[in-house]
Length: 288
Image 1 (spheres, rainbow, N blue to C red):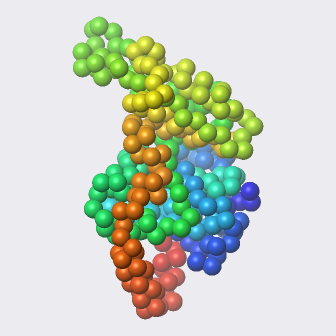
Image 2 (image 1 turned 30 degrees about the horizontal axis):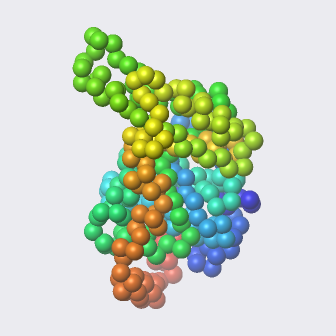
Image 3 (image 1 turned 180 degrees about the horizontal axis):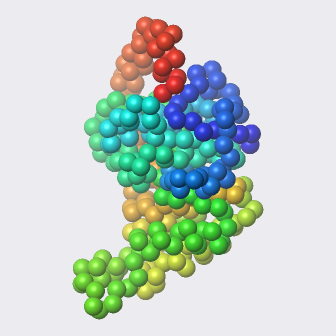
């Protein structure tokens, strides 16, 4: 795929440009830069969208993330930004790195999922319902290079924190009880990568989980280790109750909760707002 994204702090591009598949963001950044940052910030999201609506899908992803992040964490500081988009090198996929320390990808993703499934049907639900290209917003707790050695080293601290080894008898009973009965499964996907196979990725991560006390349960795992390998990069996240969140598919989460009348009303209001916007207002909106 031609580069579909670059480093960006927010949505950009109008509707016409968004409909041109393969449109390149300026200052495109390769996926390998995800794990070569001086600040060490490697958390973020993987966004999937319609391959023929690349720019529109990325813009929608940034809009949805920014909207819910403002609700959960408050508005971003003036002149600051929370997300940067990277070219994943794979059709229909974009990597979004979190650059705001306040934003926790898993926390934000579950907040979005829970609001869409059980929260009030409000403007946030309408915003998601009106997306045309965006499909999934999957949280990523770490990005790393796609190799068994790098994945093992990068994932070990996270896996040991989520799945602590069996505690000695001298440790607190509460910690031991928490460690007991933890079931897990590994959900791995590979896209355009020749460096790390799906089988090797699953084996590498599964071997890091202390067993006992933790056990594999492919039907109803308490925690799912989600692995996505794309080109030379790898993304990992440990998600409790993964099936409940429908793999963070926004359309599946929302279903048909938003009435068509509400969508038509919101669309009409947006058109009226666009008609009253001045060129300076539009320029400021595009920068955000």
